[in-house]
Image 1: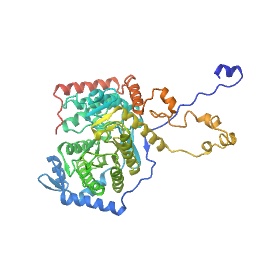
Image 2: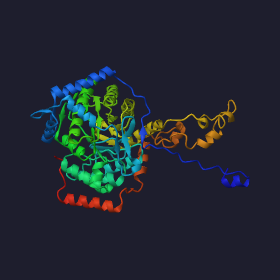
Image 3: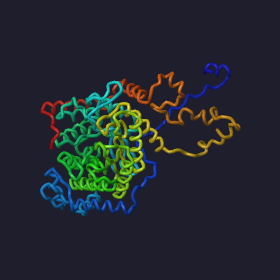
Length: 509
């Protein structure tokens, strides 16, 4: 019955359904944490990590980093640095327990601390993949596409270095990746730490894009980077320099040892996580020596290798257990921490979904603050898939729904508006409570199809990956949003033009 017919009969027109209101921008983890080791075992792992740094040491390749360690009381022998526990304890005393991260839009700010939850899409892949064009070396166009898709979904609170745009020269690539982020999104950005010259360029571009003075920039956390140790027990030149540069500028470094059990780490979960913990403590100490109170995030990416091929495996039981153990050690220190999902599958199939979900739940039940590679990551990081980015976002949105919880007040229980309105053997389709909530009560899927088999056939018999293709194509068909005022964009472009004409900056310290 139309509105005119209702009016002719003296009936009021039905109100338009309300739009569904959700907030995925600042999430809290609602899940009780799981523990894979006892408190005594965690204490022993922490003690062993301290002993490792004292007796076995870290190989540190950057001379400046060795000088900073030595000034802080470490014993240095050539490239080996032996870090006393009193140095680690002093660093832990100054490392912040909560880090307020400032996005381009203040409504997208987030605080990283234990019990907070932030997601990032897959990162660092040399290849892009989709059903239309197949697998290929990643380009600047792919980097821009991934940035736009990640911006589209609020469940990604932080941007990631999605792929390496290989058509951009290495001495100019950081100009492209920074500008792409600053113009296509206003979320909390990632900046590469590939040598001091590039890092300084990145900081200046961010300052221009945000309209910040040098003092305002260094007094707030406006960006982050990833610092990977080279397991076992090595801190190389660009990563050590990145820790120092980001600490001195007051910007966030997320430390991430990549400890694969049986390859770069002991084959056991306990041994691999103990090594990861030691490397974290070494990096954290350098950060705090460079600038006490510098924002630093504990991190781990620990899984096992396939012992038949030596290839990295993800979403395995060992990966899950390692995430739980890392969470226990992060809570032992009281620091926000980073974990990761991901998949070793070569395409967006059921293996990819299973691995990503098991890895994700290890992060969630381990109490991870930041979950990297939460969507899109395939082949153990060799590619990011457009379709998987969408199908994984579906799962992350559902997790975000769980973060919001539910209520059981009178309106929700619905005695007056539901239970008392329906006779035995009746239905609730037209109960007042249903009519008031039908458009807003449930999560609306992106790609999941709840139709029966016949209807699914009539719609073209598309599987989830094919439906995901239509989703990302629709996002990219929209006009590009511009997130910088014209005067800031002009200043940014002028800086990039000048630095490019000067020769750019090679990725070296």
